[in-house]
Length: 533
Ligand code: BG6
Image (cartoon, rainbow, N blue to C red):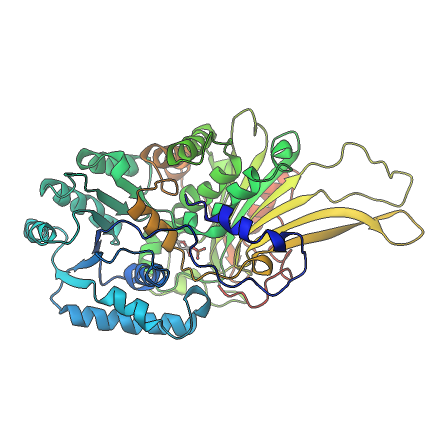
């Protein structure tokens, strides 16, 4: 991972002592960052949504930051004949639209024409079926003439094409690294749909490529707020001593969405909320919170520590999971009425789980995970709930109960942290009241153009695997949930109203443990203004 956080920290030291919002520092250029080495980026799925929405905008932002090498070339493979000029026009149109809609994630609302033209000059459309030998034979000839021998193969395609593409690349000898040039594979999620399929996919990939050539993406790890979890934990002396079972009562990891399945009904029907979010995105957050301090910040040290966490997760059982599906409610019609969805569908759009990490640091501390579509709030956050104080010093005063301290890492849509603690309410009586101290990124740092894939793409080109998932971690994560994915009898899917906080059974799961979920509206007024989904 880059040491950007560290640099940003130093250059903003003057601001650190100031809690109130001052004029923001000028947007930083990428101080200390160099252009990535030259490479040819081959995108399988050139016509897909991922290419339009995320890859091209990220390449554009990287080009605007001058982080790409002049000899870079971008070859887009897709079935269907078309001219490169048509592909360019289509991408230009979509980029202009995104730039207008999402100013914050781009350099300006007006496209930086110079940066975009830098990208478009390097684009080349390459027609070809993903499953035919002929495509790969032609690709081999084309790559032999590329400006750079380094090649990054990006599989921005449906999961059913992962193995066939890798097999064809391997058979054509396109994954062999020669003359000091790299050949890397970038694979999107979903990486398998259970332990057996993930093992099979890893087996296929590792037959043709070494582990160090494989970059398995989890886009949550591209978020600055997620990367910052390690900075908060390991760049401050105050957290580490209490970051353990002696002080922490429970950890709640939430990824609540207000959107529905957004036209992806067909995909979602086969996937469901649990597979879509839990063993990948939510486990990655859990890994960042629960891992031991690594010896250094290099890829293997960090990934080893994360792998240890997944390995320590006690396999989930049916009692640890609640599934739900949204029904018609204040936020609109039910899931079964969505396009592409079976009217009798039993696919879950909500999943909650109780997870235990069986190791010295976390034994007995539940990690409650939840995610869902069409919930009342958009909120991705991690709440660390501390234990109550050991002794109620104020028992002779009108203090009923103290609210335990809660430290929350806010990932989306607000970026920052909050800390809930107790103080004396002013007045003659000793009365205790809960207060909240909040840190908001925007108060300290200039907002950076970022669609979330910039760091990931840049790191792939640099060969930094810190933010990518290793084969063993993927498999241990699936192993932890495999029993729930293949239960003896189907798990019940509970109804919840679209626009609510999820099924009542998820509340009951925590109630059995004498706990409650942190309300989705708890921090609604803290820095949420103006933040969109
Ligand atoms: C994707 C899931 O991986 O992550 C989507 O397939 C989900 O269903 C999305 O909406 C959430 O990501 P983010 O970055 O919008 O929180």
